[in-house]
Image 1 (cartoon, helix red, strand yellow):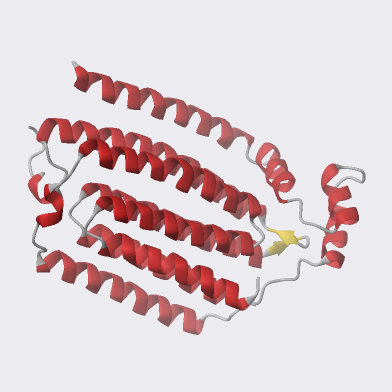
Image 2 (cartoon, rainbow over the protein chains, first blue to last red):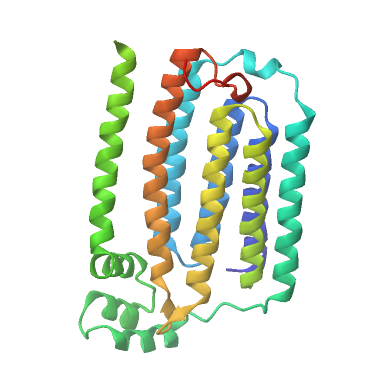
Length: 188
Length: 105
């Protein structure tokens, strides 16, 4: 990814993140989270993680944040905006995050930097030797010279992570049942 | 080209913003959103490590698997958490964390 695009998306992401904390109105905060996640998805796509970028848009900004907005509008919180800010939590939050950033800069200034390994056509053709000849991944790598991101994710998911995937299915089922049970008991 | 440390710095700054939001804000829905920001910051560093550490010339997809699982678990967490917040609001008529002081209502 060109450098200016990285800085553009990073700026969008960080400004969105700061706006989440700064806005008093919950709806504005939720829309700032959407802005932040759009910038983050741009960074993912710049890192050649196309599937994760699309998932970030679809799942987070499309589903999760819409759910947040529904709940905010359902609760109808008007009196929250007129509260006075307390100084202690704000000072604690700023001090904690400042300490974190100082540590982060200290660590990053001592670690050796690394440039992105090339993902050009020659590297992809070399990588195709590790997959069976004639398979979809190998033919896309060799013929098109593109990264078959979704195929590679599917390949990894269903070969190396088959059991965790099924556990995840059970988790989603339990979450669904739990949400129904939580909502139902209150209605009585 | 942005280097690995640039991505880690961006991810760390996003995490710091999320951490500050969790400590500073008293509205429980915004605290929850800031938790999502922190999860996404972790995802950014995972994807950056996956891209910068190639295996056989391709990005290391084990890192992106972890991102996939984090996103799925976060979606389940949001569903359950928001259901709890709605139940809490019905019981107490507030979602301000300073006013939620007792465990048994």
